[in-house]
Every structure is written in C-alpha cells, then in structure tokens.
Amino acid sequence: MNSKIIMAMIKLRILRVFRDKSNLVWLFVMPMLFSLLMGQLMGNWDSSGSARKPKFMVYDLDGGPAADHLLAPLVDNDKFLMVRADSAITHARARKLVEDGRITAALFVPAGFSEAAEAGQEASLELFYNSDRLSSQTVRTRLDETLLTVNTLTAAHTLVSTPDSEGQIPPGRSAHLDETVFQKRWTNPRVKLDVQTLGRQEEVDFPLTRSAQHVGPSYTLFFMMMFLMMSSKDLVEERRNRTLSRLVISRASSFDLVMGFFLGGLILGMIQASVLLVLNMMPPFRVDYGDSLAGLVLVILLFGGFCSAASVLLGCIARSGPQADGLGMTFTMVLASLGGLWWPLEIVPDFMLKLGQSLPSGQAISVFHDMIGRGYGVGELSGWLVGLSVWFAGTLLLAVWRLRRLVEA
Image 1: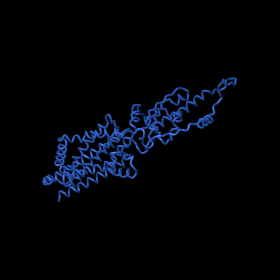
Image 2: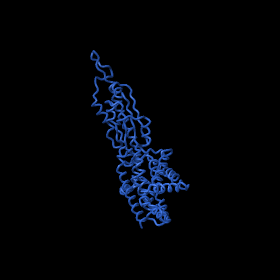
Image 3: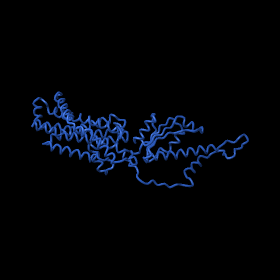
C-alpha cells in the first residue's frame, strides 16, 4: 500500500470539491432548505406519533407503601409502560425528555411521601406530561383517578374516631372504616359515565413526535448519498484522461486507487454529515439524537462508507460523465424513496416496510428513528448496524474487484 499516493488522491479530491463554491450549496444549503420545507409540509406528529408502549418514567425518592399504592393501578396500561427509574434525574432533564418525545411523561415522588400520607399531612407530586399525546393524556387521567381514590379514602379515615373513656363516639364519626366496602362502592358506583374517544389514535410502531425528527436526519442521509453518488463521474474522467494508467506506472496498486477515491469520498461525507447534524440540533429543528454518541458515529461512518464505495463502483461501471450522473441519480432516488428518506417507513404497507428496511438507506434512517424516538443504544441498534456493515463491505469489495479489472485490462 502506497500511503503517499492515497493521501495525495484524498487531498486532491477534497480541494476540487471545496474550490467550486457551487458545491457548498449542495453540500450544506440545499439539505437544510429541504429539511425546513418538508418539515413544514409534514406538519406535526404529536397527536399520532409514539413509541410502542411509550415510557412513563417514575422517579421515586420515597419507595414507601403509599407510593406503591398510588402507582399500582398504573402498572398495566395499553397506552404506556410505567418504568420506575433506578437513578435520579433533574427536573430540567425530565422536562426536556418529555418535550422531545423521548418519554411520554415523568412523575417525581419526593422523599417522605409515604410518611406524610400516613400522618394525614399534605404531600406534593410533580408531573411533566405532553397534552398533545394520547399516551401522555392517559397517564394524567389515570394518575388523577388514583389520586382521587387516595384522597377520598384519606378523607374517609378522618371520620373515624376511637371511643372515649366512656365508650362514646363523637357525633358524625364512626368507630371503624371497612375498606373492603369502600373499594367495592368506589369501583362500582351508582352512576357511571360511558366515554368514547373519537378522532385519531396514536400509531404504536411510530416512535417520532415531530416531523423535524425525521426530515433532519433523512435529508442529511439523502444529500450525502446524492453528492457522493454523483461524484462517480470524477472517476470516469480520471479513466478517460488516463490518469489511472499513469498512477499505476508510478507503482500505485488497484487497492491504492480504490482507497484514494473511497477515503476521499468518505471524508467529504463525514464533513457534510457533521455540519448538517449540528445544524439540525439548532432552532427551528432542535433534533435530539439521543444519548448514544457511538450509535450516531457508527451509522454515519457505515452509511458514508457505503455511499463512497458505491460511487467508486459506479465510476467503474459508467463509460461517460453523463452516464455516471444518470446512474448516480437513479440509484439515489430509488434508495431514497424505497428506503424511507422521503417519508417514514412506518407509514407504508408491511411489504414495503420490509423492503425498505432491507436497503442501506432504510437501515440508516431506522437507526436514527430508534435513537431519537426510543433512546436506543448500540446494543439495541446492532441489527441495523450489522446490516449496514454488510452493505458497506460488499459494495467495497465489488468496487475493488471492478477497478482492479479496469487497471489490469
């Protein structure tokens, strides 16, 4: 391997791209413009977007029986999954998680809650929830019902008094409270209200709550793929100008040539993706990519590696610059449309969903959806990342084989 030739090829390719100021438009300006426009067109998904069993996080600093009694009715619910956190968190962080759709609600149970409840003293709880999400509304409703039960039972206990020394019970008081009868009357009231919820319901397989959470990453992937695929014509020009032949004469192997073109494209893709992902974290997009930096780095590296390797392969197949442009645009549009970069895969029919998730574009955007909407880390994302690795490795091997044949011919 001739590292000097590889580095020279990388440097030359990067300089060519950034010397042409029009390239900056397609690298950075157009992706953000499309993200903004498509985000406005898709609107807001708060009323329908949710994860499968959205998480209702409970941060219980008390751990007493009163807290257990309060939360027991919220354990099994078809709209949310109640999770009692095993670590503390700040109120600001919990609020941010709810606002970004990472969790559907957050409840803080303060220390001493059970002691205050048993002593008949006032006790406060803090709840953060999103009134635009059905699962979050359900959390608030069920918690209100439970609190009403607890408060009513507590009020009933204030009417109970032990007899005095003469065996007399104060007027308006009772000697004891039969909680079994109370619960029976509470769960089977004399007057019932039959309620039906009409309108849109949340889709259980859709983890996002805002369109920006999809269009930001999707157009980052789309324009990175398009720019690299379309740059395959650079390799065609090198072939037509016999630059490759001269490099071979200077003791450059076919592997050196592939690495030069491949790494040059990969570095360009990394620069483009890094800038776009940072811009999408700012207003008005405010995309939170989750807590897995490793997952974010891996998905960009693997998808960028696939796109760069594919551009080398297309540059070996095409016979002219216009043909390379046509092939690059065709592959970009097919992978983008079928892979869910124009619209979320979660809204398409099942057979289209499976097809899209088998493609590198579908696997890459699924990683983003799972990181943003479900808070997944590398472990949960391993299936998608392995799929991307297979696409990347297979495409790179084909590119090496094809370019070697051209050089040796």
